[in-house]
Image 1 (tube, helix red, strand yellow):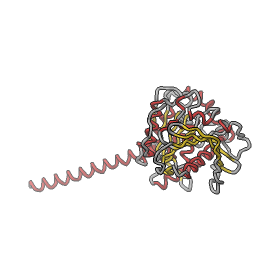
Image 2 (cartoon, rainbow, N blue to C red):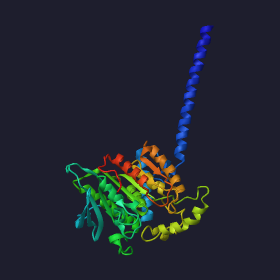
Image 3 (cartoon, rainbow, N blue to C red):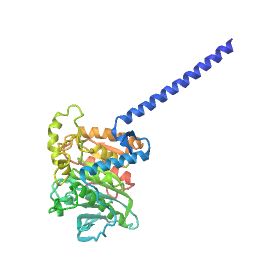
Length: 385
């Protein structure tokens, strides 16, 4: 009788453990499904246009392509990059610093298109070692690339020069309508937006860096502030050769009206959207989408998702009047689901300094250290002059 009781007790206990295990597994699967459902970023459309959850890397690549297609719907198509002409680099002048030589150059990006840029080459003893490289994109400034060289009054914009001091090969091009491209004519070019022209130019800068004997083609990143901040994200989404993307004061969500306490933002939203629709940026937002935020085919959390699982760092000040930090926080929360999908949460970094539209020294240093870590670089000089 005692043996029978024990036998039944053991069977009941084992059955209970199995049921508990199954219940726990059910909860785990349910929670994972709920996490996926929190973000449209983890859903793609199959060949029949039916939305399905992303479960595999192949399905993610389909989703990523759909994001890039949506970006091109608002920016115009990325031009064909096959059969491009030689660079035909012209060196205009050079300036020698203690840590680098800065060359003023221009080069061919496509037939009848030349791009002015600064090229920084570190001075070093070991000339056989291949160096990491950075593409440095300037903000809205009439001087163009001069801003990231520290030539303006804003000392916190000199990240091209500072990265060169740290031992990076750096290329800093002009954005169309600024710097040596101040007379650029958007009406007669072959692009549907200044944004897409910049993406094409910036990808050609990466092409140029990869041809250099002193550059490690697998260790290239991009950094930018404001105008350069969102352009660093755009080129980072399209160009997977960029292993780290740093955006300072460069973005917030377009579609922000689903957040609470956003009335003031929405009142200002139309004006901001109008700015995005200028010829210098994305006029299709006006011509094709009538400045309707609900019709815009992409948003910035999707741009970040298209960068994943590569490294992304955002400097998003709490008092930035151009790019509201609340929209950044919502976008980061959305994009984090994609980084979790890849198990790469540590590759998504954001800082919220208590400042206005700026790239403060402390955060800038953190960004440089993040770049160093991702690109496996030990900087020659860490001080900021």
